[in-house]
Each structure stands twice: as C-alpha cells, then as structure tokens.
Image (tube, rainbow, N blue to C red; front, side, top):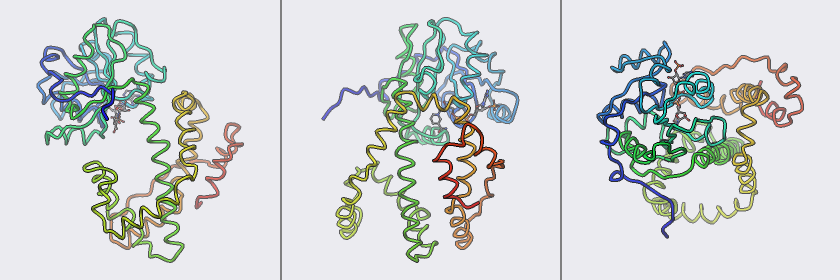
Length: 363
Ligand code: NDP
C-alpha cells in the first residue's frame, strides 16, 4: 500500500549544488565531528566553530580550521548547528541570531527547538533539518562503509527558494540518503520524544519486571542477565526485524518458541499500555513536555531521578554478575546530592512519583 510520504534517495541529491558554498559546523561532539568529516570527505569546504577546549583540540588534530562560533557563522554560507539542543537555544539567541545574513542556510539535526517554537529565525534565512537516525559514531562508520543511514529531513523556512536542493545535496554529502523521509520539524521532535518517553521506558519496565520475576523464582542472576541482555540475543532479534520483518523474523526461532511466544503474547494485550502511550503522545505534541523541561522544577526533578536511578537494585545485581562473569566493572556513577533537601524543596515536596522512586531504590 503506497503512502503519500515523500522519501528521497541517493539519486535525488546533487553534491555539486553546494560545492561552491562554505560550510561551518558549530560544535564538534558526537554529530559535529562525524558530520564535518563526512562533508569534507564528500569534497565540501568545512570549518568548525567551537570554544577553546578539548573539542576544539580534536577538530584541529583532525585537520580542520577552528574559529570562535560567531566568526565561523560570519564566514559561512551554510551553518550546521550541532550542539546539544538546550545549549543551542542560548548560543543562538545571544551569538548567532544577531549576525545572520540574508541567504544563509541554517541546518538543525533535530526539530526540537524550532518545532516547539522555542527558537525563531529571521525571515531571510533558509532553515532546514537533517536529522540522522543514527548516533554520531554510526554516521561516520556508515559513511565510510558506503552503507549510509536513514534521516528525517524537512524545510522549515525557504527564503532563497532553493532550500530543498540545498537540503538534498547536503544530506547526500553526509551519507544520509539511504532513505530520507520528509517531515515537518515538530513531527520529527514528537516522534523522537515519543520513542524516548513511551517505547523506551515501557520496554525498560518489561525488561526489569522479567529480570525480577526470574530472580525471585530462584534463577541464577548470571544466567538471567546472559539470557536477557549480555548475550545480545535480543539485539540480534531486533536487527533481524529490521532486515526481514517484525513477524517474519519469528521463523528464525524454533516452533516451540513461535507457539509459546504467540499464544502467551495474547496475555499482554489490553494492559492499558496503549492508553498511557496516547497520554504521553498528547503531552509531547501539545508542547507540555517542552514547556515543563524549560522550567526550574523539571531541572530539580531530573537531579532527583538521576540520583535514584543509580541506586536501583538492578545496578547491584549487574555489578555482582559482571564480577562473577569476569566482565569489566565500570566505575560507579555518583551524583552527589543533598537528596532530602531536594525532596523537601517547595517544587518537589508534593510529587508522589518521586517519593515512590525513593521507596523503590536502595539507599
Ligand atoms: P554533543 O553533546 O556531542 O555536543 C558537544 C558539542 O557541543 C561540543 O562541540 C561542545 O563544545 C558544544 N557545546 C556544548 N555546550 C555548548 C554551549 N553551551 N555553547 C557552545 N557550544 C557548546 O551533541 P550531539 O552531537 O549529541 O547533538 C548535536 C545535535 O544533534 C542536537 O541537535 C541533537 O539533538 C542532534 N542529534 C544527536 C544524535 C545523537 O545520537 N547524539 C542523533 C541525531 C541528532 P564546547 O563544550 O567546547 O562548547
């Protein structure tokens, strides 16, 4: 069943289109480094904008000219904004917005700031999104192997009338035309947040519950963690879903497994997960989440959540199992906090979820 979604592929982009334009990549972190290297290897002229620190040193050792962000923006026709979304807002408003020229192109790797109306760009600038569905290291690796990666792309503002051509040329130069799905910037942000806030945590809860049930029933924790996580069997199954299909991959498992999974699978229908996900979707799409995360209460709550996350039972079990299996033991993450003071702060003292989190943790 064909859809009306616009999808672009390799043959739709022409790198020549941006060959004579200068590019500044602001930020040299996960995405910044990978994208800058890919653009340069595609024959484009790239400089980096970064403060004087370890990221700058890395860019220099990779052979790039590095300027202060505002100087790089001034020199460039195309500006990739590749710093964390929350930091970008401040840098953009204080340093970048005042010096933008007519006809420059701004490239965002996420629709968050524009999509939720947190950041506005003056009318004379092209604003496009090239959002790789891949971490930075993968963006680079898949460019080098020629495999490419999927991306979500969109034009938010087309001042020059040529924003789409620029977008396709740049996406091709990055290696992102394995298939580029066009969508508006807000939808990209909503989809991304939904995955993080609905699917991710629901899946995590299922995993933790399964581990709990098995250990409570006397299974050796080593075997449980190997079965559920360490063997990477689930990761392989997930890869097979991508390669041959969600249901078709079940044929790679035994008949016993197929029968057991599908017959027992029915038990988990109607648990109310979908309605919780719908609520989460509405909260994101309605902008409540973005507004919440802008505020002081969310920043305080985040510190409490992070503190208790490192004190969940699973951390202790994992450490014991890793020791027993002679795996590398990672240094414990410590987030020192005066936790009682935080919990009693006027913003958080009535937050029942946080108090439940405390009960579930090992102090
Ligand atoms: P990183 O955390 O890796 O960015 C680090 C870079 O940002 C460094 O160069 C750092 O340099 C700079 N930076 C951080 N804070 C500031 C600041 N306050 N002012 C100026 N520069 C700052 O970011 P990512 O690569 O993870 O994310 C970049 C963009 O890519 C975001 O929009 C993100 O949503 C998007 N994205 C990320 C993906 C990922 O897998 N990570 C996937 C797809 C999209 P310094 O501290 O020296 O200033």
